[in-house]
Amino acid sequence: MRGAVFRVLAGLLAVAFGSLLAFGDTSKLSLKELFGIGAIGAGFGLYALLGSDLGERLIWVAFGGRDPRGGGHAPADKRPGPEAAPDRGRPGESE
Image (cartoon, rainbow, N blue to C red; front, side, top):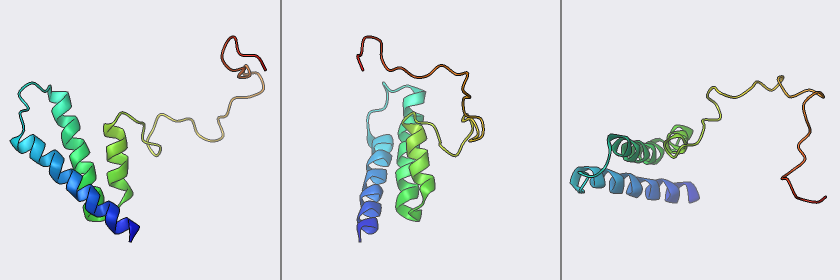
């Protein structure tokens, strides 16, 4: 039941973002902002239609997050060794 409610809400958000692009005043938006709004709307639409993780990942990347399944991360066996400096917290904090 909860999944169906989330999919309906995602569909409403997809329609809202789509109508903003179609009928809203986008004359002062940059091309990057227009593509961002489109990507967020497409992500909500994909989630509403498919209920898949693909829509969630597209929304996350559109908001500036890193795709956890994409590149840019070190493999699990490439953890820092004992020669790496330990994390001692913020400067000025006492233990």
